[in-house]
Length: 163
Image (tube, rainbow, N blue to C red):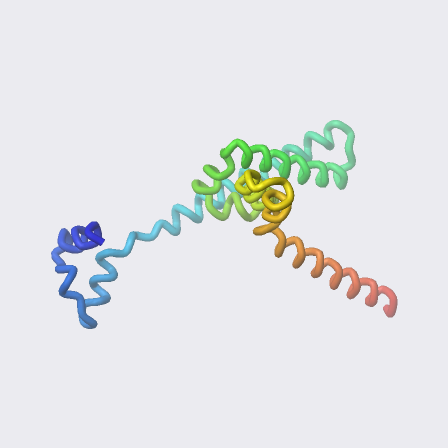
């Protein structure tokens, strides 16, 4: 609280003299400046870089003779494993602080969301720690994804059945 008082006094305002009339100017004086543009650019660049790495992995598998359809599945698996390893080493958290949504939206962010709680709660044991907390963040995503996949499959099946 003392820091805020000092920062407001530096800007020529008295901390104790805040009322309804000068509240907006007080808030504007003490609020941190926005870095939205910088955050958007970093998210775009890092998210794009993750996608480029995924595409390079796909092209590598195609070069080895794997079909493109199978190569995409292998690339997704590789990205998940790489993100899990980087999470275990503590590197992915640093990437996440730097890139924000650019690291959480691709499939690597999902891997991080599963592995990070498992690592955090490993001291509580395999069942009560890792087993129960591993899907704490990613569990709702998995449940919703499977539910929506079932609904889409039923709609598609009914569509082809009656059309």
